Image (tube, rainbow, N blue to C red; front, side):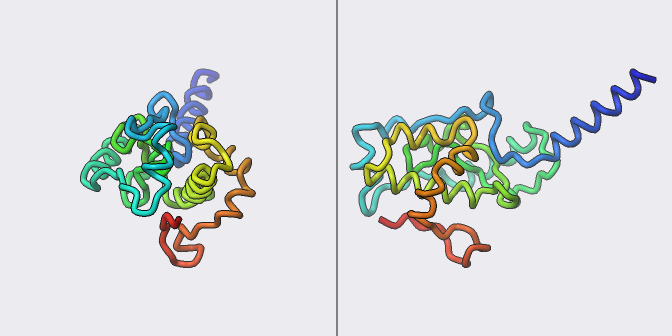
Length: 177
């Protein structure tokens, strides 16, 4: 009887974990990675200028990776349209654009969905470009759990308010200078 009860509890725990959205990636799978072209020395010239090059990988690459990761991570909700293939270290802070070590399927919806992380990304990008925080500090804010940094940097998030989520006001995220 004890053995059966243990198995039932284990199955319920496993199902609950599988059902949880991946708001924060598993650091053993997605530890984050930097773009070797964006260094502490080149950040301001390469990212913080009007018309800075976008290093975003093609949608065909990220969609394929997202589908593979959803299968590999045993996500119960595997509708790819419910997820953004997100960069743990944001591109705007010199995150690696194509490395699977920097990409994971983040849910769009929920308390800690992709739009909320976008707000932190934008605020830290603006603060790093203006010299209010270092690039190293901004990058470190995303590992191991960006939600902790969201609370830590609430003042910057309010200062550099950005319109990311349709539920905010319908406008899209734009890197304004």
